[in-house]
Every structure is written in C-alpha cells, then in structure tokens.
Image (cartoon, rainbow, N blue to C red; front, side, top):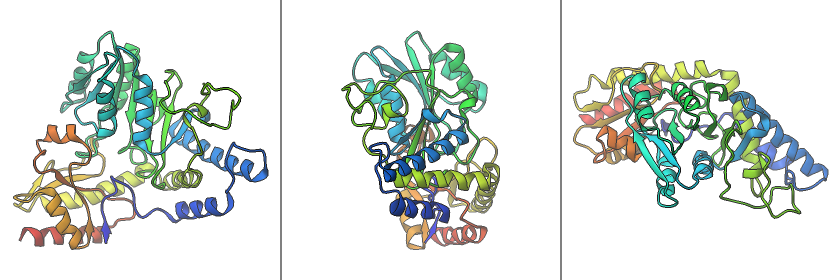
Length: 376
C-alpha cells in the first residue's frame, strides 16, 4: 500500500522513533516520578529530556509542557479548564470537532456561550470577523492553525495579537501545522495544543499542551501525580496538575525522537518537499474534467494537503476504490463538520491527499494513473 493519509497520522515512522520506543520498552521500565529507585529515576530523566526537547522546539518553559494522549485530549484540558460560568468562546468556521465539540458541550451549562467566526479570503477579513464577536464575557478564542480539510492556514499570529490587545486567552490547535510550518509560544499563543503522531512523527497516543501559564485552568481529571501525595488537593504546579496517573513513557520518549527527526530534517525542507508533491498532484488532476478540485494552486496560505472529489462518486466510495488499487487516502468528513459545512460538502465529503517526507514523486505519479483509471 502507498500511504497518503499523513494528515491523520504520519506513517511510516522514522527508524529513530521506532528505536527510541523499543529502547524505552526494554530499558526504561520504572514508573517515572513514583519511586526513588534507580530504574524509576532513570525513566524520569528520559521523560524530562523529551520534555526539554518539546519545550525548545515550541519556545516554551520546560515545566509548562504537559504530555497528553493526543491533541483532542490537550484541547479538552484547555477548553474545559477555561469554561467557567458565563464564559464566552469564539471558534472559527474551519474547526475540527476536537475543539468545536468541547466548546459546544460547555455551552450546555453555566450560561456558557460561543460564536463562530467566518473566515475570509484575506487576513483582514478574518480578523474583523473574530473581533466583531468579542464581548465583555469572551474568555478565549480557540482556533485551528490550519484546516485539516482545506489546508487553509488561519492568520494565527494576527489572532494572537488581537487576543493580547483584548486581554483574552488564545488557544491554538496546531494539529495540522506543528512540524510542517513554524509555530512558537513566542507567536503570542497562550495555550498550544498538538498531537505527537502527525507532523512530529511520534507514535499514536501522544500529544502536547504547552502553556505560558498566564491563564490558570481548572482540572477535569484528578489523581496520582507522584507529588504532594499527602494532600487530597490536585497540585497547582505544572506539569503535575494535568499529568494524572502513569504517563505513556514509551510514547513520550519516542516523541522526543520524533522532535529530533523534524529538527534535523528542518521544517522548511519538510514543508517545501510535501508542497511540491501536492503541486504535482494538482497539476495533473486539474486536467481531468471528472475531478473536482477545491483550489488549483499550492501557495503559502495552505499546508500540504489536497482535497478533491470524483464527480458523481461520493468520497468514501472513491477512497475505497483507491484502497483496492493500493492507495491509502481518507474520504469522508474528517471529523470536521464546520469545515465541510463551509465547503458545502456535507453530502459527499472529500478525498484528502496528504503526503509526508517518506513519499516520493513516483508514488504520486502512480496515484495519478489510478485516479485516471477510476474516472475512465
């Protein structure tokens, strides 16, 4: 199978990541932070080293790096932690359900409300849309860095500046940006959430929530942290406050190796390489009259993914046909109701092409031929 579903999770993983996970499973067997014996201490040190790598990569303080199960888990911690009585949230019309659903769920109690900002063709249009929805109760803007359906990059730095000006929290969902385009806490982000298993090339079951600690978050899970064990109150200090129970030791250590891989490869090179593969696909598909493309050129307003459809065939059926031909692409609705509503594709969904550094031009050419056969 030729794998082009890297917006869901990157595959294959770099050997350095697989080796790090194996080493963790065979050498770091102690429970980190739960004992004073050598095996536990060595494991805790390995976890700390991974935490330091993540902090450096995103420009955060080491103690403000919280390991999570995935990006959805991180977003839930942030959103539910901010969802106090009478709070008002603003999200974009391109949000993944990972942020839209927690905000919607919060709105069912404590007089919490939310608004959806309409993203525009220009940065100024989008910023005006967000600013027009801010009121005295607005607690946070929660938005995606880039749409997982269209690839459109939101003006997250300008949104961060708006939040700072208005004195509200900015929560950034970097699921489709981290590891592909540069992003840092220095961009004005208050809370940055991202998966470990996508652009950072770590294993599934890993994620990050990074915070500048300006906004204190309520907890929605409590339990053992290895610290303050004689107190029934959940610790206030980070990262312990949000890392309840035993962490995913092997996953975290392997995520640190994924950070090493991306750092060595360099984000700009990864981005440019994947964009060229997308451009190659677009240039071929736009010549096919039986293909619907949702944009016809890659540029710096998008991350490297391409949504398309075969006219007269719903996306799930087309993706299944491509799977039978040996290609992994995702059809359907991509857990992003709002984005598909905006695109007017709620009836058909779209097929999503998302390459990684491990794909090549010959694989893209093979996909182009397969699509040509399907469209006859």
